[in-house]
Length: 366
Ligand SMILES: *Cc1c(COP(=O)(O)O)cnc(C)c1O
Image (cartoon, rainbow, N blue to C red; front, side, top):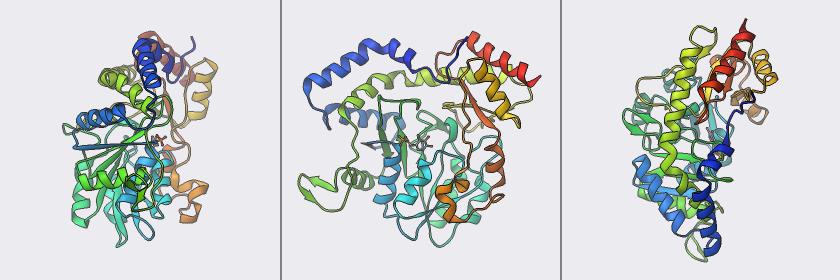
């Protein structure tokens, strides 16, 4: 039985009529940049996340960049974030000229260890950028409290967590502003690159919108140097077909995770802890074991999709070598990076498929 890590073809089959209709409508209208679908998607995402504003842009990395640039965070500034994430989080910080300051993670949720944040605050710190890793929110109350005490902004990297909750509120509404990605493999994905940012701060939303559109609000008059980072009308139309299904897909991901948790309880694998403060959207179902590479090989040999998330923590990447973080600097991130991997947990995965994944793993574990 071949089981992919993620099955995007099944999703297209389910929604083919609606998706093809939306694509055809945009093609016939020949309105490819901006327009009603982009505006409607922005208000639908703002409403979904519980924020006053949403600003669509080219991708999740750009959303983070636009936020930082609009806040005036740049050269000489420091932004506290996690090393156990996709490179884009810290890349955006570096691209505005600021310095990412990495704080270690929790060994059971892989989110920022909030007890270590305050020690990393300096006179140059301007913001904290938690990542809601693998779909579970970081512990936002202590993060917001530290930010309040030191007058810092809180920027959520919510790229993996659309729909996740923290004490009843949705990711995207938990800090000053948040970035989301619509990369195809994300919980809400488009047919290419796409992103959006959410905030209650009208001034910030306008500043981001202007930066994303060549620094202009009135055509051919440019107040600042911006960039070209817009969401295509085609992508917006596709996302509007998918958004009404997101909660169901997220519930299916959670159900698959709960089933794995049960089936793997005494297997010797370390499972991802779920915190009571909110609901995860299980972007990836992650397990941990010292013999990761051997277990992943057994899965692949059996035709089962798997991948290591993340094999190298950001402070140990060549691209950030100039920051001078040696081996041992962030021991938890370094140790989990050698052990964590994802199992197929996509919406619609069947009981039989999960049973097969568990059978292969248990056999390899001996
Ligand atoms: C996917 C992702 C991003 C970047 O999103 P793109 O749309 O691919 O630019 C940023 N941060 C995290 C944590 C992500 O998973």
